Image (cartoon, rainbow, N blue to C red; front, side, top):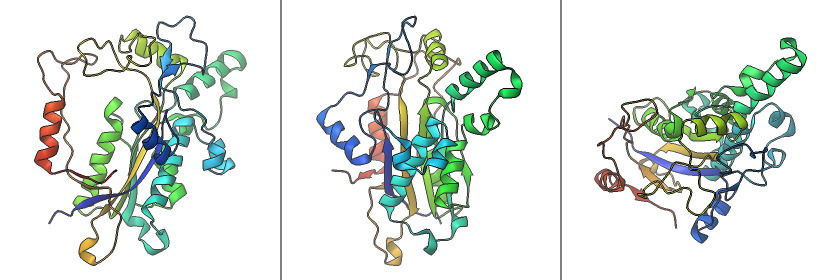
Length: 296
């Protein structure tokens, strides 16, 4: 028998707020998180804006020693996961750690780590590369560090499916609980691809909006859209088996139903002409699956 799955915890690090409460308040105000890129010089780039996280200090959310051994996308993920876990009120001393896991994805991992170490090779030679370069840059390090920090010993993996990575991680985590492989899952996505290589690569792909107006650069459903805007941050949720039948009280944000995974491409870089998946399709799917949302 398939088990019901609920969302009990939320965590976020975003361009408009580094906690869920601040993020939600800014959403309700209509705050725009897009602005001029300040992390590096973009004078020679066609694209000059992005959605950067602001005011995030890993030392305020994580212990200093751990933060030093994480790249930015992992710091975002670990901070958001900590918030989500605390929000869910889970006491791991009362849970089986081998029934609790993590699936948190990142599309590209840390491009900046690659850039920095390649510069080291050019200036100082290959023997001076950081000894932790590989475990710092690979995309599964977000999930790995969350697992270590929260004491979760079950399933630990990541999904890398570009912009859909976080959504697919949540879908896989849902199914892990639904089919009895886990009781608790931490799931979501994290990214920190606003770097010289990331910006140049996506610009060369002609995937990014070249608008310099933050209020209209990101408009995916507009007939005059001209690309997406690079962003960064992390969104993490905690999923659990619905424990109401056992007489336990959980604060529920959502009864989660299956996600859809659809291929929408006939080329690596371009959507299929004539393929139609739009907001109407999404709304129909949500009603069909009976989504129940508990946010105010």
